[in-house]
Image 1 (cartoon, rainbow, N blue to C red):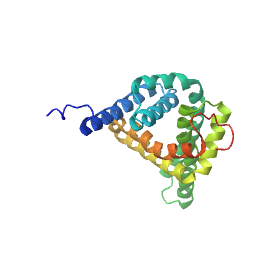
Image 2 (cartoon, helix red, strand yellow):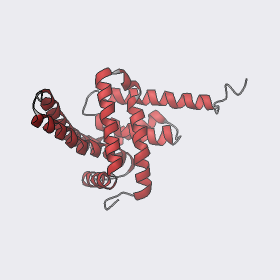
Image 3 (tube, rainbow, N blue to C red):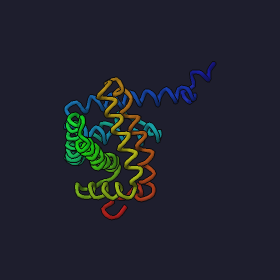
Image 4 (spheres, helix red, strand yellow):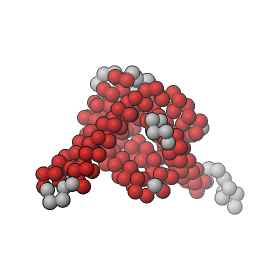
Length: 210
């Protein structure tokens, strides 16, 4: 009986992880409501997902707010820049898709615009983890993200596809926002952490080739 209430019990560990996934997802949503804070919130979310939920480090929510505050000035302009770059071709694709009935040319253009969205979406998938982990200038952040985008192209495309799927599900249903943000960060961490270990040690502040 005592094992049931043991905090080291496998059941309670899983319960704690699930609670952190839900809590971080909702916290990300609340901190993203002003829209311009989405980049800083996403940076903090990745940091907590990788370090705390996966890595087992303590103080999940304290870490979230520390990272949010620390990286706000860098993450905001970079995230808004590439976020706008992703929205433009996506909006164009939706307009063309709606007007493409009976027109093969418009349908091809719509698909082309969707493909182009993968470029800035992939950049966002690298920017937030980089911003959470390393001390970089704006130029270094973007340059390193571009390098990782190219060197790890299959991972970039996989992360961009997961991002698009999660955004679509959240827009369509809204309820997935309770868990999808943190689950997406955890899924991205499988690709990102492997790349970080391969190219950039923990104490690095990369400005050259990854």
